[in-house]
Each structure stands twice: as C-alpha cells, then as structure tokens.
Image 1 (spheres, protein in one colour):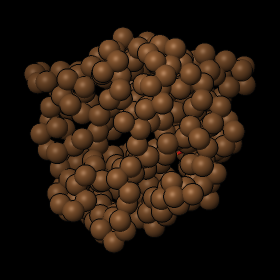
Image 2 (spheres, helix red, strand yellow):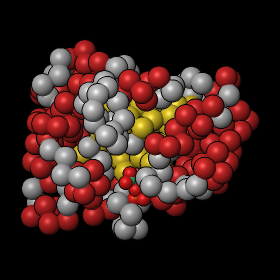
Image 3 (cartoon, protein in one colour):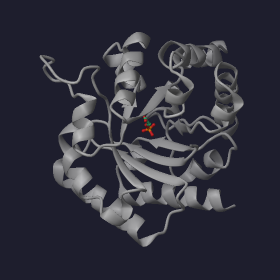
Length: 262
Ligand code: PGA
C-alpha cells in the first residue's frame, strides 16, 4: 500500500525528558488535526527511549502514529551483546525499523548481505522495514548514482518475493544531503524516485512499483518540504535534524497534508 509518510530519524540525540516531550507534542498535534488515513507519521527514537515513546502515543492516534527502531539485528535472541532483536522491537510496540541507513553502512560497515538478512528478519517479525539507499557525493559527481542505488536494492531487497517486497518502504537519501543543509533539488529527487519505481516495475511488476512508498531524506525541512513532497514519485520524507523539534516536524506534517489535498 502506498502511503504518504513523514518519519523522524532522531539518531543519537535527545535525553529521556526531551524524547518524552517531543513524542507528547507530536501526539497532541495529531489528536488536534485529523490526518487522512493515507498519511502515517513515524518516529525513530534512540533504542533506550523506544518503549517510553510508544507509551506516549494515545489510542486515538495508534493507526496514524508509529514508532520504529533505528536498527535491529538478524537474530531473535542469544549471545549477541549490545544488539536488539526485531522481536524485542515488536514486543514493545514498534511497527517499523530503519535498515541500511548510510551512517550504519559507513560507521558500522554494514554490507549488502547483512542488510538483506536484517530485512528478512524484520519481515519475519512483521516489522515494516524502511530500507535506506543513496549515493555519496563522488558517485553523484561521476554520474553513476542510479546504478549505485540499483545495486543497493538488488543486493539487499530483490531476493524478496512480491508479497514480501510489497511490505517494504524505501527511503532515498543521498549521502551528500544528509545533515549538510544541502538538499537534493526537487528534480534530482523526482528523477531518482522515478528511476527506482521503474527498476521495481522491471524486477516485480508495475502494480508493485506503483504501490511502493518511496521517501526522500537529506536536509528535508519546512522550507523545502513542499517542493519535494509535490513531486509525483516522492511519498514523504525521512527527516533527521528537523525532526528533533516539535514545531518543525509538525510543520512538515502539515505540509504533507496540504500537498495531499492539492
Ligand atoms: P537530515 O538527516 O534530515 O538531518 O539530513 C536525514 C537522515 O539521515 O535520515
């Protein structure tokens, strides 16, 4: 199902009080604003705060507002010190999990195969994977960005059956735009999202491609959200910096509502 999604990736930021307050403020905003069913809001707090944040989502918002892990491991339990099982995320009420964020790929050397295993495990646990892909600046400058992102999908997602693939959300995040203040232009985002949709149509079928939610991430903020979200193949955003404050994050949600209505 192709949803419009505004997801906040808090990364390794905030303390417990701030995380609670932010969740409370977003929940309040959603209670006061009737979001169309097609829009989903997701937050990805740091692991120690996840369970607490889940508890701050009121019942009236529990179909709209979801919580996700920023990462998970490939096993259900065992001697894996420091890791979090998808089953544990599920157990505390998470619905989503980020997989393959560029910071995980870069700082923790996560390989295509490892990410494929995480995707499998998340799906087995009935968590929705938000699979991140995107190219570094030198790849963009060399003009091989589409081939690069294609490889990321091919190696970590295209082993999935049609049924499983249709449960995955994709986030295109050019690495050069993450946390830099430099955003991809709406045309650059649209071109890549359209290329991804075409790739998915070729690998699976056009119906699956049309129904895949593809988010843009990388310095997305209130000032540029409208121009990005109004692109036909951009289904929302994975927001880092601008998701750490309730006013900017909820403003992005309101921009999504406006784009959907127009
Ligand atoms: P940013 O981060 O919005 O701060 O660029 C996005 C992300 O890394 O998901």
